[in-house]
Image 1: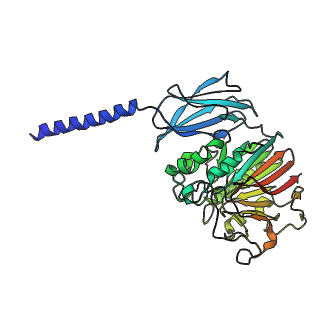
Image 2 (image 1 turned 45 degrees about the vertical axis):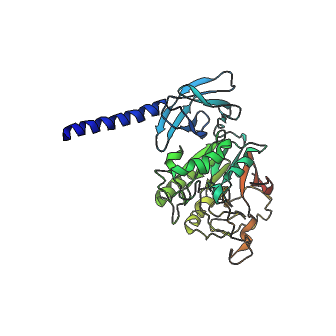
Image 3 (image 1 turned 90 degrees about the horizontal axis):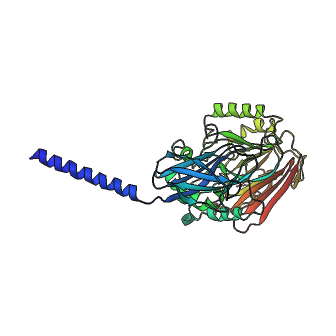
Length: 411
């Protein structure tokens, strides 16, 4: 009797699983995450998107929409939903390509706004621009505004060639399961045609980044710290993990080696990370960041960009000890800064510190207000426009599009 019941139970369980499997196979394919550009180089590009089920993955691309080539892709992850990836190779540099994505030969997304522009060749001097912002993925229900910032970037007359993220990409704890609602959906209009290169922030560390942050991105090196170039500019992302850099000795050695190997190869060098060094914001001075000032100042780094403080602050040029270089008195027009760098906090891409009054002359905020060139306390992002050895910087209000800060640097 027990044997008969067991056989009957096994049959019922098997039939139940068979029904679920059949339902899954007949369920229509659905786009769960809009396509977004991952790494874009001079000769290759990676495009990713998510679907509700496994399927055949492909992409068509071309310099015009009437003559496109087909490239097959692959499934690279099935966590939460299915991550599709296509790598396009043998591209021409600085060239615009339209693309369409397909699953099981069904067109999932395409049109005029679905394109990528391959990077400029290294050691050339193209005219290009990029945006930078931190502290982004705060949900609207909690006062966040990543969609408003994305909309303002989308309206820029000079469309950025790429974006860099200054940490805290998804609140509150950087989980993969929050990425779609808090980051990819509100940022979709720009992520489909502007690649984004984020650095890790402390909130991204609240969930294991090797199981969350790295799952969401395809970045160079180990993804905690990495470098990429665009024309005559070098970009170095660091992981300034709360309480001290991730694998500090290894990361510092890598940083010094990277800078030494690239001396004289680039006109511009940018370092970006999450935590600030010296500051007049509500955040403390982070000593582990200040320990790198000497490396920055003595290796021709031009700008240090960070988030963390949900406000805006541009500091006067520093030397290797964090002292003001007083010879650069004009904070609207800079020459090349010798043995020093400019530090900028841009930490309100999607979240603003509302319970704080930004005033560097208030001793509770700042011991040395003379270090500040400009402060601003509204949602914002920044842009850098580069043409050869000339740079134009803008701080832009997320809501109004007002340029609240600007300066030029010419080498």
